[in-house]
Length: 445
Image (cartoon, rainbow, N blue to C red; front, side, top):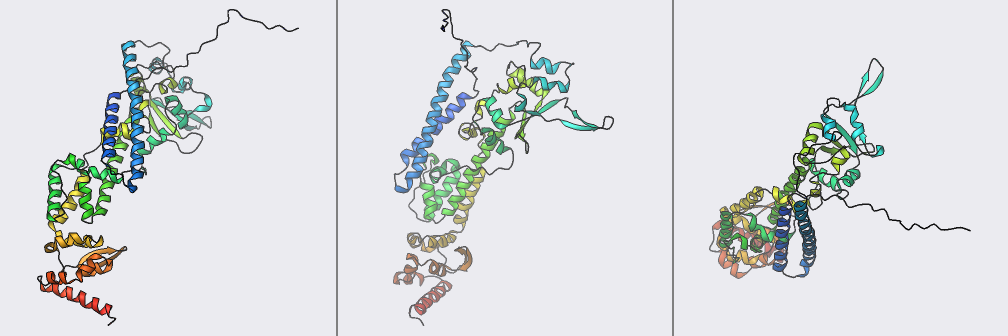
């Protein structure tokens, strides 16, 4: 017969699996930036007209807004916990390190560079020490030559990410900004509605003059913060949509530069130099300079007996997220000088030479623009235009013929003939050549 033993005084073993609380620096700045982003997106969603073609962009904006709101909730909750944690866990200064801690080990005159293998703290298969090897002509063997000032450790990115308690693949995301990269910041058309936010007041005034010069009826407000659609609407009306695409590129590049700077700034805060490792079982390398490592441990009051302990207590680990472009990049945003210069060059070009706008007007068949500004048009001039990617030299009549729209019909009308007969002899001659060719082609002469 079998008996089952019972234990009256049995108590389950309790394991405290809760990770130590990590202080997130600059949490107030992150919260302010997220609030600003949510407010901006809400305003843009309210301003945006609900057309069919807007649904996809509206969906993306709404998804982005919800993501920011969720992140804001998480950060606000963490801020409350952090404030309570700081209140109940005051920082202890001038804490003396144990004789066996990493600072004492690295600072000891008895420390030998090769001894570092005893203080890595990782499983043997998780890392590799990269040291120089030199050929010893006395022993006829290659021997390890350890760096007395530091150590280079090879890891897999996933190992470092697990130690830092961050998302997988985020290290590769950050490292891409340390060299040539093809990262692109997406700017949708809705962002152009806020183009005036980037421009100085004096340039807004120039744009206002451009609108008045061409009798567009588009009101460019003096207060640049009230610009909703007016500026891009003006450029589209004038046939300058390709210039708007250039402006979007400038906005994207300014954001890309800021994101790159913010990513590099976070990498530089790490207590090691971080780089790619090409070939082999490991894909990244971490170089620890001992002096800098000791300084980092002291500054951040880390209780470390091994390098692993340091990696598990990186003070800015929370900043390594895919949300970097929303949370940190704003601190590194430039003054959009390239965008301002690009916009100003376009505005100056057509303020100085308004006749140059009419090939653009014909290309988009803006008959109203031409009719309202006949006195500015030059029917004598020969323009360089690109039609179906082919470079051509033509006057306005010839350009209109290429596009065959409402403007071409108007050129053939009696009303236009009355207007052109009051122009220069050369312009009248060009008109007669145009009409003669039209008649010739019409009657197959």
